[in-house]
Image: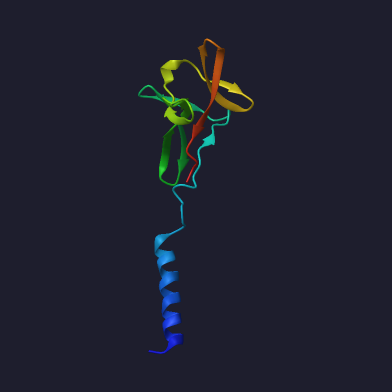
Length: 115
């Protein structure tokens, strides 16, 4: 086979692999967003959810708050329990507040971005 033919064949294989694979890192590029204070949150099974309508009907997602990990160096997202008390609105976003030895501590509430 000729060298130009192999080059074209390799280019077609790379392009077709990229098309079938989809956008690179699409699942990891979806960062969590702050829940704006205008959004209505509902209580479902003891957790807060945020619902919206799409072509598939009503879609509901859990909302999350950052909690410190056991080593205290970083934080992870955990579902916000509805029985922990009402959420507060601060600076245009929902926050979940609790009291500690340092006084009132508030964490911003997050949701998955809409698809």
